[in-house]
Length: 478
Image 1 (spheres, one colour):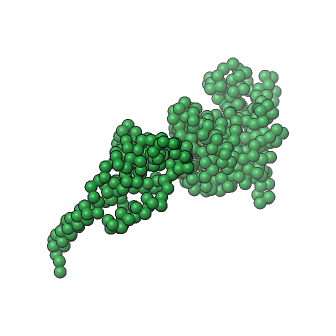
Image 2 (tube, one colour; image 1 turned 90 degrees about the horizontal axis):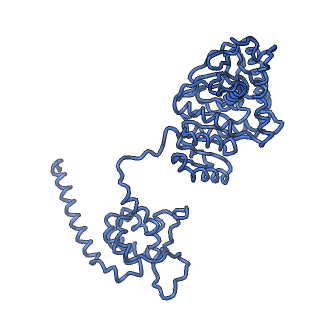
Image 3 (cartoon, helix red, strand yellow; image 1 turned 120 degrees about the vertical axis):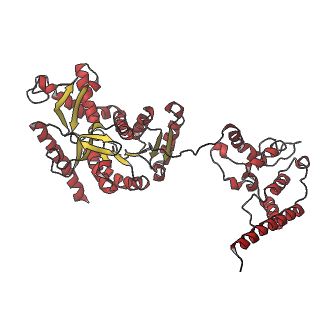
C-alpha cells in the first residue's frame, strides 16, 4: 500500500514521463514549418502550420496527434469559409469561420502580410490575371479592430455592465418617448430601456435616439420587445395603453388599459423584483391600484403620476397671472387625475405669503378676483392640447422625469402622486388618489398632513367616491 509521499512522487514522475512522450510524438508528427512564400495563394497550409503551434493549446480536440491531424484535414476539405458580416451589423459566430485560427487571434499577425489582397465574397468572380485568394483575408480584416483594441486599450479593472440607475419605459408612443427624452436630456439616468410590442417602432425609436447619444453624455438606449431587456431596472414606467381622444374622459379608457396593465406588470416584476413602478397610462389612479394588486410589490413602491402634472399646471397658471416664476408659487391639486381633482387653495402661497391671509375667499365662492378660474384652466388644459395636436406628451414627460429624479437621487421632495388613500384625509374607500407625499429612493416614504378647509375636504371625498364607483364597475364586469 502506497504512502501519501510515495503516491505524490509517483504522480510527479508520471507527469514528466508524459511530457517526454508528448514532445517526442509531436516532433515525429509535425515536420519543420514550410515556407509561407510557397503557399501565398492559399490559407490552407497556413492553418496547417499554425495547427502545429496550437495543437496543445486547442481544447476542442480530445484526440491523439494523428487523429487530430486527420480531423483538421477533413474539416479543411469540407468547410467553405464565408466572409463575416459583423461590419454590416450581423455578426457570425467566431466558431463559424476557421475555429483554430479565430480562437487564437494572437497567431494572426504573422499571417497578415502574405494574405493581403482584395476582399471578395465566395460567389464573386476572380478578376482575370489575378491570383485567387482565400476568404481568410475577410476574417483577418473583420477582426482587425480587435488587434487595434489590443494595441490601444490595456485592461486593468473589471468593467461594470449594470448600473443602479437603469430606467425602463414601457410604450414608445408619444408619451413614452417624451418621458425618455426628458430623462436623458436632464441627465437623470444614463441607461434607458424602451419596451414595446411593435418591434419596428421600438427599434427605430431607440436607434434614432442612440445615434445622438454623443449629445446625451453617451447614454445607453436599448429598444426591445422582450421584457428581459428591462432586467435590474431601478424604476419602471408604464405609458402603454390606449390614447385619450378628443371628447373622451380618462375614465373612458378603463376597460382596455386594465387588460394591458395586467399583461405588462408581471414580466417587469419578474426581471426587476426591486423596482419602483410608476403608472402613467390613464386612468392612472385605477391602473395604479390594479398594478399594485398584480405586482404584489410593497405599497410604497407602486404609485401613479397622478396630479403631479395638475399641480404643475396649477402653479404655472397662478404664476402667469401674478407675473412671477412658477417655482415661487406653492400649492397642490389633489384627488383624481381628472375632472374631479381638488385645488387646495388653503395651502397656496407666493414667496411664503398665503393667499388666504390676503383674501379669505380666494378660490372659493364669493371671490371677486375669480381665482377659481385657474382650476378650470387646469382641468381644460389637456383637452385643449388634445384638440390642437391630438395628444399630450411633453408636459407629462417632464413631470414623470422629475419623479424619477426624486427617486434615483433620493431627494425626499414633496410631490402629489397617486397612492392608496384609505383612512387618510377622511377617505374611507379603498382607492388610489393623489395626496402630497415625500418621494425618495424607496418610493413613498411619508405623507404630508394637509390642513384642509371644510369645502376642500368635501370635494376630496367626492373625488374618492367617483374613483370608487369606477373600481366597482370594473369588479362587476369581471
